[in-house]
Image (tube, rainbow, N blue to C red; front, side, top):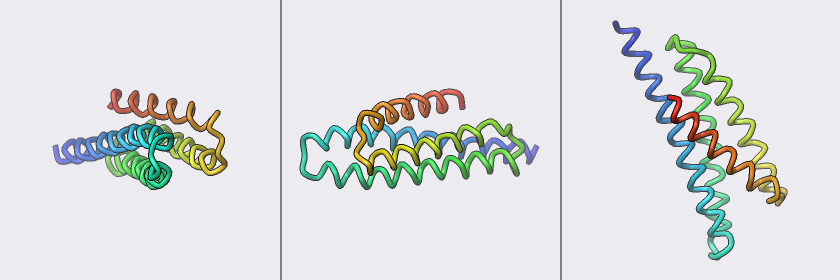
Length: 120
């Protein structure tokens, strides 16, 4: 019984981590729009990129905790690592100012994050 409660708590931590990542990706899209209209848009988008990257790392941590000590399936670990790779590519593309790939990749990441959240 105690193992089930612990597994549920860790899975809920995983769901919170995915929700946080999804929210930060949505806020990145909003701040990208501010890049076009406001002088502080670049600063906000840059800070948001750091928060989004941190949320992706939190997703990896939550997935590992749900899997290894929590006894959950290893699938979310692979998904979270994939998101971290995509987030790394996204940051590199943003720094290099390659919007032709940066923007569609951001849309893809948001869609995949919503899908991951719906599956949890």
